[in-house]
Image 1 (cartoon, rainbow, N blue to C red):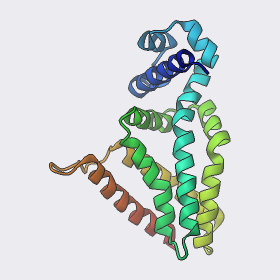
Image 2 (cartoon, one colour):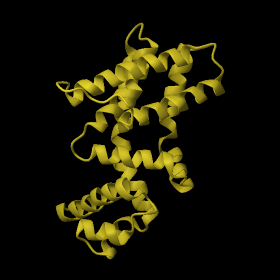
Image 3 (cartoon, rainbow, N blue to C red):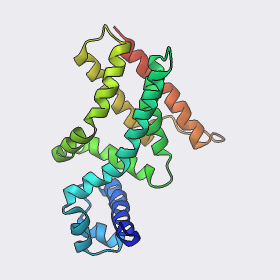
Length: 206
């Protein structure tokens, strides 16, 4: 792949990410994306083929790396003797909160992710399930080992709620705002600590 090809594709993805974050998937048109990326419509069609594929690739660009970090952290936790539920939750939660601090557009992607929860886009949900469902299955299996008495379906329900709470924390929607003198990194670390403690209690509940 030459550098011009790469930069054009990345410009389109970056512009789309910003517009989807601000206007939603239905609200942002391909013409707006091309104008923001300073490319013509043919370039979008060449690289992505359709708006649906463009949306999918905006997610793939971030989620491939995020979930690779999650799975690596999970395997490292499982290899440590005596690793507990909190460490497994940390492997799921911390990489996601780190993404929200990424200065290279991570904040915009978090808003795009929140849009995905709010907008009922069946095609996007299928894409995410087909491409990243294996990640949740791997975590489910790891949690099931630590929670042998918890019904399989009940565990999926609880993990789904944890994922929703994580998205809320990533987007920083909460009423607890960062205090003066506290860095963004420190605020996120505190968020992670509280979320992990809360999620562990929820997973361990009878």
